[in-house]
Length: 394
Ligand code: BGC
Image 1 (tube, rainbow, N blue to C red):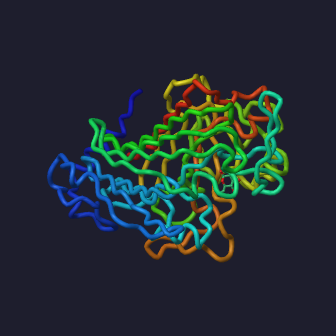
Image 2 (image 1 turned 45 degrees about the vertical axis):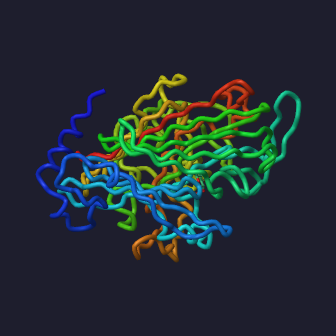
Image 3 (image 1 turned 60 degrees about the vertical axis):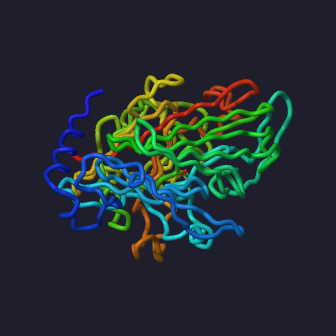
């Protein structure tokens, strides 16, 4: 895959030392050097207390001074800081200043690992091998993002490590049999690696001791102009999908996979997110805007491919998303507050449609829709997923 803009990005970085950046500074003390030593590449600091347990924030810095901050509560990506076309740094994901605020402000899944089953399961019910399971209907009348206390609200064991690909953070947790109603002890590892081509690579792995269903994703809310910089409606989005999964009024897929051709869901060529969002379209009404799963073209198990790009013409920042998953949920902050914006990090506020999520996943409600790729994981099998969010400029 050719990525000419990466060359421009590196050229911009070389042309402008971080000392000259105006908005924010990279969290690295060795900006002049072309390599980052291990001690500068990974930092660990306390980030608050949840359920009486101290939460740690891990700051990963790559050779270019790009920074990803991740905490072990919810595996949440708290910050992702990268330059614009002029070298000015900004944090391009929404979040809060401390772990506690994610609880007290009822974070709408900012940056987290969503699981065990990201997205919705109709009426919170599914059947495996003839046995019915009942989950929380925390998004009335459906189950959403793993239930009342999903993977986003758990403290994970964390192991930061320098790797040949860049600084990384390995998160591990065993979700006990029956947790949130799901069967099987689920042993899950999620590894974040900040690569030297400015990708935040997320590798997921899981095994179970009973047949279960699983759908893991990352729920980062991006604004390529910088968090709190206004709406994302001008961002130009490309999704490599000829088809999508239309939904009913409760956001459960209807089951068919119609073509995007001639609809506001055709993002095969880069198109501003806001260009068609106000059209009189039943699907846009059901999702209150874009809140839909796209069927990734030519997706095959284990094949990592470019599934989406987003370009912000103002800042020049470009996000590339690569994944081996068959689906991609586009959500554009339709439920961020319209009137009374949320107070976020660094004194910034977040309102309606001021961020987008691109959640690599299997299809929503697939435990109940056998025509969709199966989300069932059985003992002896290993679930694998890789998704990369890569930042550059164009
Ligand atoms: C869902 C939205 C939901 C949001 C929660 C998205 O993944 O598709 O419907 O409101 O998560 O923040």
